[in-house]
Amino acid sequence: SGLVEVKAVSAPDLEAMLSLTEDAKDKWEYVVGWIDAFAGGRNLGRGLLHFARHLEEGEDPDPAASLDAEAQDLPGTLFGVVPKGVMWRFLKPLTNRPGMRCVNFGKYIAGSTIGDEKTYRQPLAAFSFLLDYLPNWKNIYLPGGLIQHQSFVPVANAEQVFRDQLEICREHGMPSFLAVLKRHRPDPFLMSHAVDGYSLALDFPIVAGRREKLWSMVRAMAEPVAAAGGRFYPAKDAALPGEVYRSTFRDGQLDRFAEIKAQFDPDRLLRSGLADRLIYED
Image (cartoon, rainbow, N blue to C red; front, side):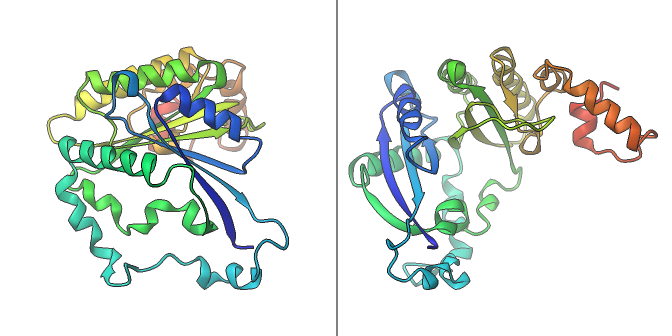
């Protein structure tokens, strides 16, 4: 079947978010959570979780139809009328801290009342690529654009580290406009970011005059991750300090990477700005 069964669940705080995620990880094939990064106090880390599983044989009355490529295409209009390609223009006036505070609050209230504990079926593409419901969504961050910082933290330390990160954002006056929580499993790859734990991805707009402060905040958020045995997803990060990234590899991975690089590219002809910032100290 091209459909998945989805269940939506609200969580009043970060502890509940992680607990519900942990309970669901062996029962559902997909677990993803949205966090209202503007909420503080006892509501810090509140949000909504979506669990999904592939349908078993016989559950979909017409699996061939749901597996068809056209059935997986996201609709091009909202309510069958408004072209989605222009929707970002209506959201752009809300792309500021007061506006996004209202958007996040409204999303949580709607999800924790109307949508809480609801189960429904959805095409796999629609579940997996939620932001693509709004084509060109990144344009709402123009002219400065945005950065994303994603931390991966082992289970035992995740709640405290993510709590610290959300508080750091609030203290700096720059709560994340979009915060996404996921559960992960480790893998055997040399330079992998995966851990047996959670990740928290945080989106921040780049505003003229605040770039240096934003980069400083990213460092403040990254240091407790490294101290807790966590990792980072470098392909999503433009502000992570190289020394912090390198400190997360404690078992000789960087030395092994250097050996492979020296063997196949002794003159370091193949390089990137990302590698220069994160891996090479020179």
